[in-house]
Length: 111
Image 1 (cartoon, rainbow, N blue to C red):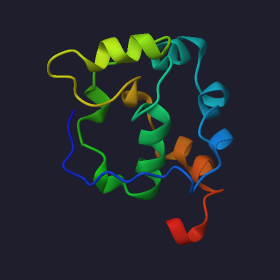
Image 2 (image 1 turned 45 degrees about the vertical axis):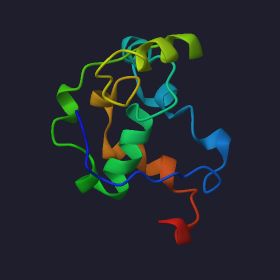
Image 3 (image 1 turned 180 degrees about the vertical axis):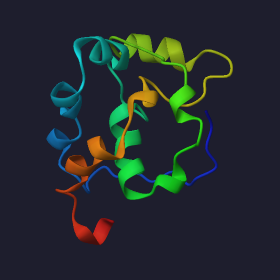
């Protein structure tokens, strides 16, 4: 999975405590374990983009290999692998429906 879409840094536009936790409400235990610990482009972020700007999500995201980490050390190890695709977690689990409540608290001027 790769994308040519521009990267947008949303930190400061959305309260940090709202960046996490939606997975616990919608994922099964197995899906939550697959998503693991992620800080970039996992199912939650992919879901937000699917809801806001689906044209920026690669069409093959459902086939993306899961890159599951349990902590920062795992993420560093994953990111150092030659050919790392630039994401963590399980973006294949993303959905626009999951992204909708995550983005509802963002200021309208940022959308």
